[in-house]
Length: 297
Image (cartoon, rainbow, N blue to C red; front, side, top):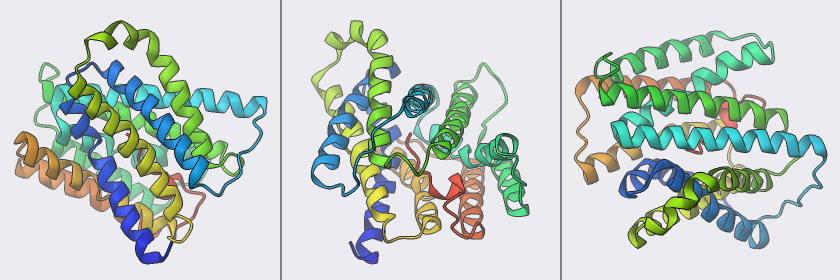
């Protein structure tokens, strides 16, 4: 893969991640069914990639690896469920922007958990994201669907930050595709009891949206991200994936007539600028989760 094709693959992956909320809204099913189906289809896609496209050798997992994968799978399941609740309650745009707060949570939690000094650019990231979220919030009435949905989306960002740090703790031993496949198996098993009674009521068209969500927005997008990192710097990948909310909001505007207000656009712009600036100033260190963790919502 050349740098040009890798950059193109990154943009395609970012677009696919941006379509996550769109497919979640198109599917007239509960968040539990959507997440179960997404994980099941993602397992098939990732297994195909691991078998025919991946060059990484799978590692034999020890007990500590299984515990971390179980924990990360539980966090991923909670993260996805909260995100799709936000989509159903508040729409794609607000859910996507609320989730985009995850780098700020990652910075704060890294400082607390790993006792790392928070740098000036990371403080700027937290401040800009916080201001952006305030602007994105239509009002502060908890009875409002938009506000409730944004809170669910921010919770999704927090859960993803915890997932990122869990992955960081086990990084370097388990290949990314192997870890993602195992995590999706855990997600599918966790959601099966809640989803099973509803599966017979899911329409064929909804299975199509869920299948596209699992195969393209999870399996293919994650695989493109991993493959492109072989020739693209991590900070470049982070900048490209900062465009994900732009793709998501644009598609929501075109398909669902979700017209963002000027205040929401300003808030979203602050959040995106914060992510881009932080990733550029970080110097591309592979140690920083903000720079290397692909969105997986």
